[in-house]
Length: 254
Ligand SMILES: NC(=O)c1ccc[n+]([C@@H]2O[C@H](COP(=O)([O-])OP(=O)(O)OC[C@H]3O[C@@H](n4cnc5c(N)ncnc54)[C@H](O)[C@@H]3O)[C@@H](O)[C@H]2O)c1
Image 1 (tube, rainbow, N blue to C red):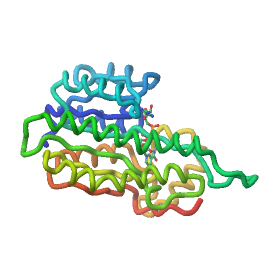
Image 2: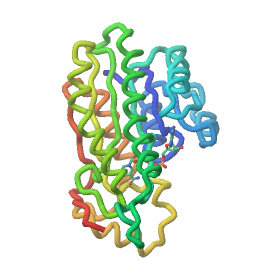
Image 3: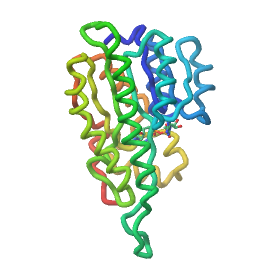
């Protein structure tokens, strides 16, 4: 799909990977609805972007709120793209230091945000896209965000790993489910990206993280994620695949 004039919802678009993607889409002549939490920087971000952007406050795990946010996209030209970046982790081990079982509530919280939130975004966005006329032979394209933790979960990442592996698992099935509607689905599995999530790290910790990336030996840039997300939207033959964006990193146990 051509990005010019394309209306795309970007969840988590007020920060990090989502924000860089929103910026890239607008630079390419697209229209963007940033969907993020009410307390996020979304309202300020769209002021900077001007007429090509709208902000719709919503929790991606809430069916009613997310549907209302997609109404904004419908009024803004009709939804054809979704780049779903909203997500976060929470440290949890199977057993804590005292040998007590890890928190079920924390496990559920991470699964709900990352996996159930992705399913909610997928299903509601796909229903809107399916109503569009075909353009360039398709009705829409969806990009989900997993993580290399889906493949090499580290100690303390068990809920995040489970959620992100679930997203990788859903990708091909979702592409098959939506094939008859001419909607594609791909997932990006980023390595260690230089977003606000990592900005708080001490310089020496950051340097040691960078040294774990084979080539290039640095953190990934949000613009590199944005470039790949845009390529997935544009390239009509990319479908049903999860693409690692990680400088060849393979995460160590801890
Ligand atoms: N930064 C990394 O190194 C890295 C690596 C692998 C995967 N990821 C994944 O990439 C995605 C984006 O990460 P980031 O680094 O840009 O994080 P970030 O914290 O900079 O941005 C995430 C955004 O999601 C929003 N968000 C959180 N919960 C939400 C909810 N329930 N509803 C709506 N919005 C919500 C936040 O308000 C925030 O604006 C996440 O899914 C994360 O798991 C990040």
